[in-house]
Length: 183
Image (tube, rainbow, N blue to C red; front, side, top):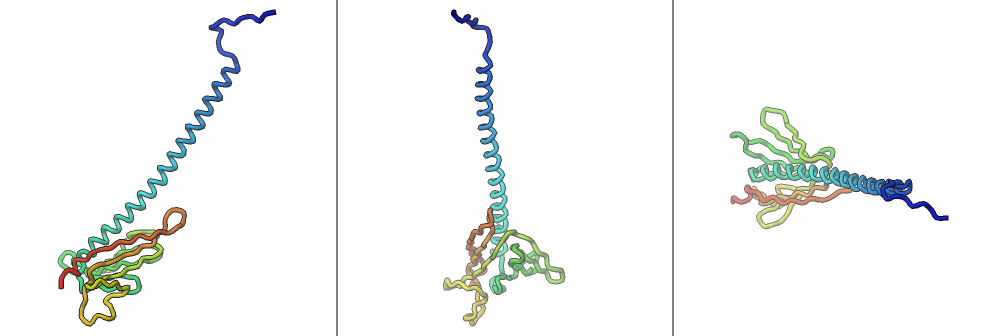
């Protein structure tokens, strides 16, 4: 006996429907996995960009202060850089230090309370050095060997910052000082 022939417009069989559903499900799961990966990558990138913007903002403030430093007023001891800077016709003492994993900018005006500005969080350490006219670097300022008042010519800051995953990274910045250009 021969099997009956099916008409061309009779529809699709159950097996054809199941195969098409399985293919659609595989495509959907793959698309969802790609979307999830792109989303997580975007979140991580955004967090890193925010961190880089915070670091860059801190260095802009540092550079501005250091370029306006009065050279003979600089002191560097116990990891804190202190100097005078003119602000609105008067001298203001600026101090850069780390306290509880935060890089701080302390502003001290005569007759007012200190103002602490949080520049950067998650700072494991900050190491300052100042360079004299001959190109020697010192971890304390003024140098013990100096007999006269000495102006620093450059400043170096090495930050040890915490990155993603708890690891730390070092960032080094050199700052030329306008105060050291005079004699």
